[in-house]
Amino acid sequence: MNITLRQLKVFERVARRLSFTRAAEELYLTQPAVSMQIKQFEESIGLPLFERLGKKIYLTRAGEELYRVSRTISLQIEEAEQLIEELKGTEGGRLVLAVASTVHYFGIRLLAEFCRNYPKVRVSFKVTNRKGLLQQLEDNEADIVLMGQPPDDQDLVSEPFLENPLVIIAPVRHPLVGKRGIPLDDLKHETFIMREQGSGTRYSVERFFAERGIQITASMEMNTNGAIKQGVEEGLGLGIVSIHTLEREVEDGRLAILNVEAFPIVRQWYIVHRAGKRLSAAARAFGDFVRTEAHRFVRKDMLQAALGEPAGR
Ligand code: PGA
Image (cartoon, rainbow, N blue to C red):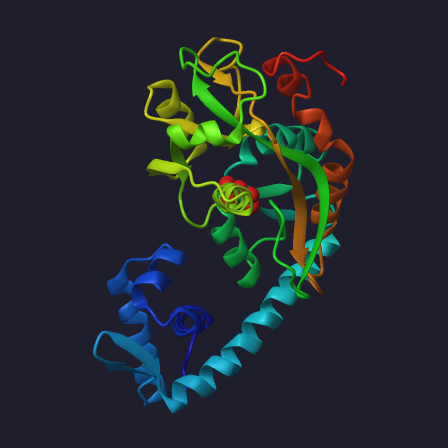
């Protein structure tokens, strides 16, 4: 058999996802390129690895056996890569970070400072929502993930490092702006621009209202905080976002934070990695940096100022 590591890698991804399309997306290849690799792979093995029934593909017996072996080979390659990163230390090591779309606002500032301290570390910084982050962890693609509370999972090591208050934002001329202690019930008359399914913010907002038996109306769904902020400014509805996504919109008079009973919803940001993952020196240095310094990269005055309360309360 004359098989290459590249073919094995493509095969493993198609087998894991049972989809040529998803494998192609994740490997940044075209679908015909993936099909070609699989075809050549099957030819050099002399047996089919997938079978197609209707629209779905399945692994053949040979495919299943090879999938098991290819998992072991890729884990060993990953281990070798991690070992090499470890030996490089923070001089030239690599750090693969994945952060929640909501975190990246302060995450970039945090990373910039880290890179000034460790200029030789090469960084990959991926931004996605909660669902995407859980997938990254499952696929062992990120060293460290910064996200909202991860699910209870024995395969994950997580630690909270910062509070994450969620607030309701409104256009500045909205009639509720300036009122104090707005009852939750009053929100029933409003419409909201919600984050997409799979977002941690969306998940906590839904849980918050469900626990209180309050039904809010979603006027539309948007998949970035930036779009929601703009949508709110344009009067498309109210929004519920982490205060860490707000930049100068409040000071500049473009958005207002509403003073609503039981708000903010206080969540936590967590630093997460897979249990048993051998973290490189660069990843460990970044973890320490997040734990001790993250608080310097968010504005603590914003919540009090926006709600008209004296700072330091
Ligand atoms: P997001 O937030 O998925 O809404 O961007 C991250 C999280 O809460 O995990």
